[in-house]
Image 1: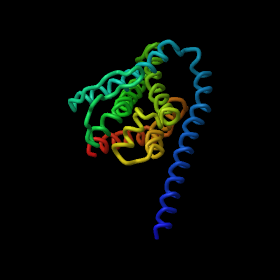
Image 2: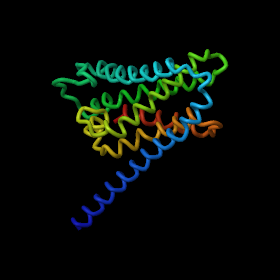
Image 3: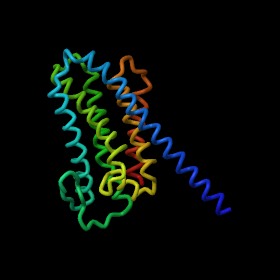
Image 4: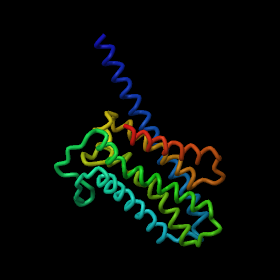
Length: 214
């Protein structure tokens, strides 16, 4: 019986790891396939300085999310070079999950606001359009970073979420990969099916609700 349980747990872990890997490959492949098309289509009108500025704005929003939620819970934080840390904090699992995931929550909200702005495309200047597209691209890029080289960082968001929730790093990488894949489709593809943005918005909303009711 014990051997069977160990086998089933090992099978589950291998399945999760394989699924997460496939999802990461799909997100990366989607970006690689679609970005060249977008560059060709948008190169004449894209303001690349504004686009990059939009991406860095998402990074700032991500970090501000951690600060805002930590402040909400009266948790002291410090900026330690490239990451925010919480010295001597005695966090409950709920607090740790909310704070660790706050960057994703805020960038999800920012990306949906950006998509809403882009839907009024005729009212945007080329610079504003590029900046707004950069915000969405920033959300995708940050997620890819956390799916790959930041996934197992001891002070990283994925690790903090894993510590709080009991889910593995691979499971959490899969969960954050899904909206990134959908947003890549929405941003870079032409003639996106109507169900794609609806699914992305619903997924993010359910995710945020699950975090705050944990």
